[in-house]
Image 1 (cartoon, rainbow, N blue to C red):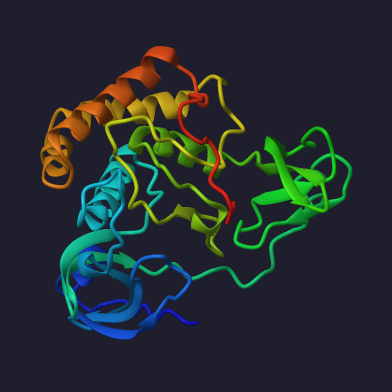
Image 2: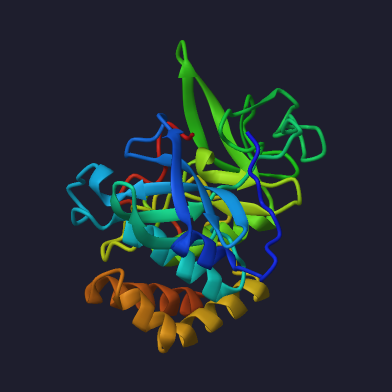
Length: 293
């Protein structure tokens, strides 16, 4: 599926395009649990594909206030931008054909197939690895007791007929940044299908509707660095984020999440800087989403 992106004559930004552009619905992405619509968006000579998630199509959740998932998607983008990592596609809140909702730039998948474990990223243990569909080539099940070179172990998973396999993710710096972002925004659903690599080598994370809860709900596949020291780059990003949360970013997030959730976000940033380490599963909440994709 092509995503037309024409360079505009007057330099329209992506945020302007998504906020002010005319949305034309192409169809619904049916794999999603909530209403997710693929749209064309056009404004002042610029066109692109985008994803539109109307609030009216959100499925109620017991642990998140109704009608707030779109705002949390935008909040996750704002935090990502403040880190300087740009891990979330441009995301805005706007009116659309079906009411107010989240609008996010569509990320085109790369043309090439993901490498199998053992093809440049280590063998996951013994070479008998299987890339998980929806894992963007960064997630695999391997018949081994330990992750091989280039991989990080997540845990054992049942694969049928009484058999288990080791679930691993790539030891990839892009994933490590996402792990830090997820810890900050308290992501309750980081699955393999939410990882979008591009042909240019970037990696994006999407589907951030269940984030920013004041209670600890971190549930992710990116536990491979649990307990390890944060990289100097991550510490610098968290320091930038801490400062931003005391200024314009804090004001912006206050329009998208509750005051209690904003205070909890500040506390998570402070806690990461104080410990200097990636968080570990708390044991109070299922640590890994299942199915992993």
